[in-house]
Length: 278
Image (cartoon, rainbow, N blue to C red; front, side, top):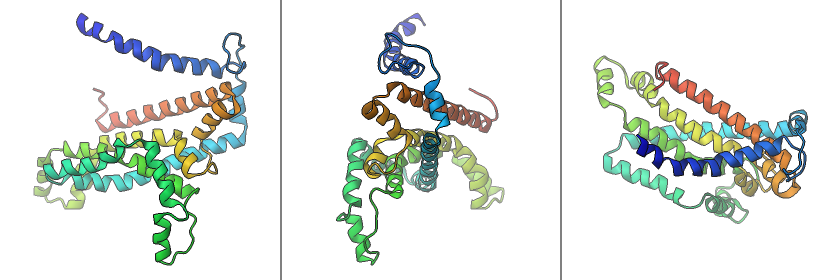
């Protein structure tokens, strides 16, 4: 046991330097009012009051949560059937299909998002296909739809893989028992398959919603700066405006929101497992 504790020391040091210290500095900046200097500071709640009393900031936060919810719902609606199909395939086919889903993830997410700019632009492939079917000149790029498309494209694999993992681990004898007891395929799915796959669904929702609500480069590239989300607001405060303290306060608010959501998801998962936490 002592040896394992010693082996954990490098990780603890790394976590302290790379995770705990930056978060502590961000929290400190959020309660100070001296720009980007922490040598001389005074405690204040001004930045939090500024955020919660300005309707424009709250609108941006609501817009970010709304598009994250839309992204999560679309990923779930598309991801569950895909994961179900993969789980019902042969082992060889499963490996091939999972590989097809993960291969695009080997490419940097920024590069993949840039590719959609060319596809959605006025002379892009999608615009030309629309013209062939008589849709005319349709505004595709720099719209909410383009931002939503980019988020679904980038985060959909996380949903599929999580649900597929849960479905693959499911005991097929339970499905056979359900059929033997006279349940229809729809009843079997509703009473057996869906409840057993809920852990994967919950994990998938978490892995999609959290990055979607804080994404900044997808709205910036596909929204063209016209679709401003909370991630863009934080980036703007740090890089463009130079208001490190206000940007830190927004970051802390988002971190608290995400932690609360993760706690809620964890409680739902425990309740789904019968109220017993392992």
